[in-house]
Structure formats: C-alpha cells, structure tokens
Amino acid sequence: MAPRKVSKSRVPKCPDCDGNGEIAETVRVGPRKGRATEHRQAAMCLTCFGSGEAPTTE
Image 1 (cartoon, rainbow, N blue to C red):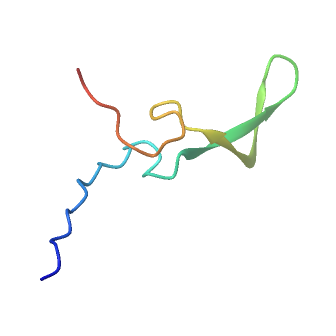
Image 2 (cartoon, one colour; image 1 turned 60 degrees about the vertical axis):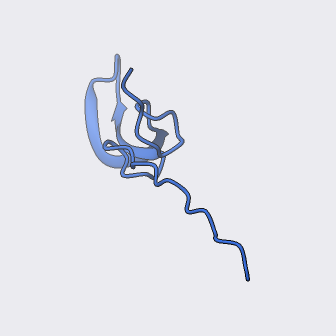
C-alpha cells in the first residue's frame, strides 16, 4: 500500500500584491517628483517583501 501524501498548508496571499510579490507604481517626473505621468513601473511589494505571502500578525 502506498503511503499517504501530506498536504501542504496553504499560505494566504498578500492582500496588497495578490500573491505576485510586485506592485505597479506611478512614474513621477520633474523637480521634487512633481508631476505624475500615466506610465507605471514594477516595484517590490513592501508588505510581503516580494514573497507573495501574507505577513503574520504577532
């Protein structure tokens, strides 16, 4: 008889990046980051630090 497989516990996704680890930031140009453009760039999610897992609350 084959041994039972242990199911891995599901880690909840990060609410800010939906488990991707990246978010889209608005590009700002001009002196002192004055004017926001319609362009977006990828940035690391600061809530989960790019892991995609929800942070634990302790």
